[in-house]
Length: 154
Image (cartoon, rainbow, N blue to C red; front, side, top):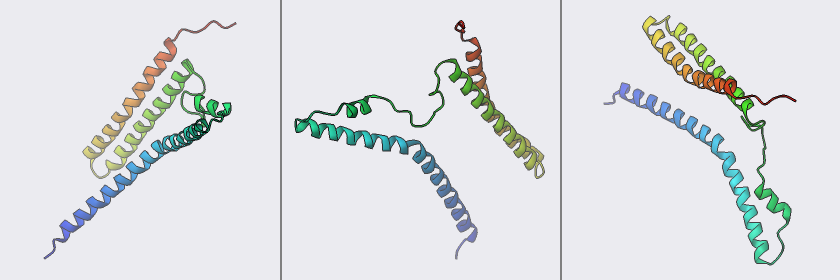
């Protein structure tokens, strides 16, 4: 009556689908959550300003200053120092990511080669080749850093 292999394949597919949806929601939540919280806070400040303006009360200058200035809550890539240092930091990070993916590809290729030599070569090559993308972008940033004219030291 029941095809147990079909049910097993369906449950495997659903499990994989739920895992990827969870990962997608986690990444989107971490990326967009702080932005949403800041926008809600800013909206509340606008409402306070509007209420004060409607009642004819002066708006505190601190409130206006908090809306116009950019706050740096946590150090981000490139926020600390402008210019060539930003290019150097990006170059180092991207080249490290590329090397990490290359090592991951080597490890996967080595591990899978115990089961299938061709499979290990294909999987390892794909992952290591993917690591070449950020590595070459990092190399381009390094070239930009090195090609930038230096200001004379006084």
